[in-house]
Image 1 (cartoon, rainbow, N blue to C red):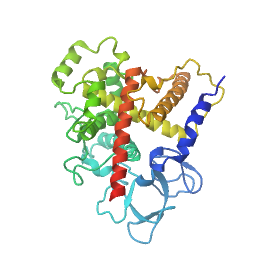
Image 2 (cartoon, rainbow, N blue to C red; image 1 turned 30 degrees about the vertical axis):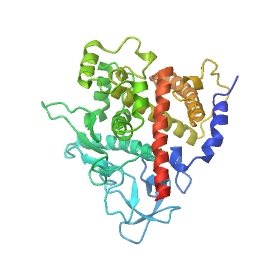
Image 3 (cartoon, one colour; image 1 turned 120 degrees about the vertical axis):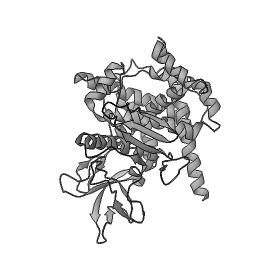
Length: 390
């Protein structure tokens, strides 16, 4: 009987140790006193040290308050920093930014164009939950090397920004969506009861705040990385022609629902609606995979004597571009992740909870995921080359 993560670690351990810190996406953090701390923490519960998240190090760091007003020093880092201005608001932001940066907000908070009216206690709670999910999204985007600039004051043409809105009483409903770099989130998605009701009513197997962010930012990066690029032809080959009427596609989906055999080619039933939605759903699942696997590796997750002989791994023949230099690694990561998620789903069932990952991947979905990986890697490599030339 093979150990589940025996082959997993054999395939990935060497590569993992060689990867840059910003690509690891580990969530295994410790205070200087040795106590485990977590992504959202602002203080160590053991030694009471102040904590902050340092985006360029992709890590929680212990803070020392400097003699200069408003300046903090991160343990192990020479550069002085300051706290995000949203640290003491309901957002509870624990991120840092360089002390010399004239902006009062960190790289994640400066993406906000509109926040809900905080005089309403519910809105304050909703915003707090939304910001936690958004920071996790932004941390991952930065870690994998994707461009993240505020549309408000950093990159008006190609940047990103958020509106967090709540439907007025008796007024029109706020629709979560993306348009030209603006992502709108209905803050009531942060209400667990309301979100679960929508999930039930729409027969969705999965609906989370982080999932919303990952899906909608997929639309943004399609505009940014695919629309006017050499990736457009491969996109159309796998996902379809996005020039098909989106309005008609939504109408058809509403009236007829997804095809009965949708699982043979799509990651979700909603992905069948239109090539744009197929892309956004696939993109979101790519981010799910990368973040969850990075977290598992960061904690040294392993298990012995677990039987996974029923799993048939995907092969190079299942990929979109089997000759791509990154194909073997992508395949190794994907198969390892599937092994891991099988155990996590069983753990959830053993506690009487729904599956952590209630989806099944088909070969066409794997091909689409590889294309997403290739596009992300291409952007990261291009950015690295530009920095080296500068």
